[in-house]
Length: 122
Image (cartoon, rainbow, N blue to C red; front, side, top):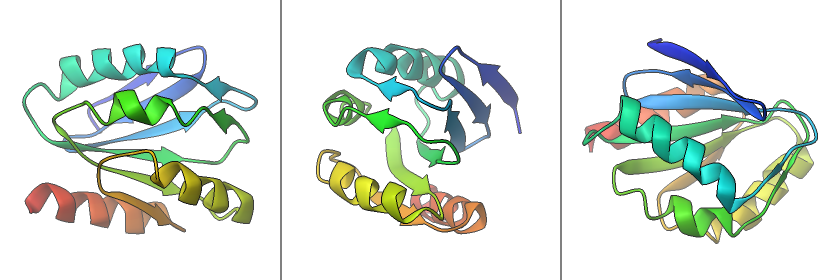
């Protein structure tokens, strides 16, 4: 791990080729939250591909419009959701329709980080 960055709505764990994000309980993610992501991308992944992994251990909502902005991040190589919760996985299936990048859903962090490494290697 390179760094841990905390915001009022999430904690981001920064690694060389992927980030793991844990959103706080009860948050509603909106397109405005992408400004934080863009700042992190510019700071840690400038001109390097990376994968965004969201570890859904808390309950929160996502405005699907956020994915229109996220899709514009050129060096975002993939996006994945890690959750064992049925509802979170079903919500992710819907969110997947709005992101124009590889998007997967996994039960474990190990599966997600393995997939992230494969996406970066391709």
